[in-house]
Amino acid sequence: MSKERLLKRITLWAQGEESAAEHDVAVFTQTLLEDLTKLYNTQRGTVLCDDKFGLPNFTSLMNGFTPPEIEKIAFVFREITQKFEPRLKKINVAAVPREDTHGLLRFVIKSILVFNLQDIPVQFNVALQGNGSVDVQIKA
Image 1 (cartoon, rainbow, N blue to C red):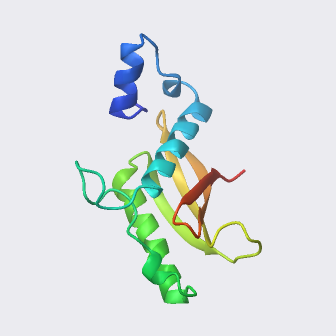
Image 2 (spheres, rainbow, N blue to C red; image 1 turned 180 degrees about the vertical axis):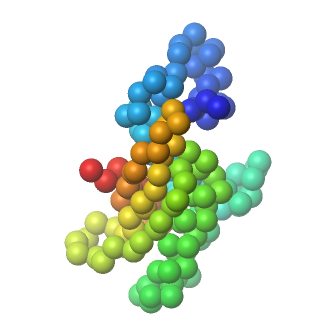
């Protein structure tokens, strides 16, 4: 199975290029980061080919974030990541205590990246912003 999404492979094929993600784990991880960013910044119900793609609207939960609400949001992140990101397995999402002003709500996603028959542990920092956008970064 290819390491790139179908539309990326078609674009590379049309340009006569080979996919660097086939051979380089750093490029593969960056591609994964870009795809997660798109997934988390898409509002559920706005993609014509799959109305379950993306995050639901969390504005009804934006009144202080009680522990049950935070658990619900973490559950949603884990579920959509499992459903739409087959390159990751053993996905664990945990809320991070808010220590600064970056992000209204923060999570760490720990997972296993499957690359060339290898299991590589990866972590992502996810920050849910006040405007509804989601910032995703690879945790170093």
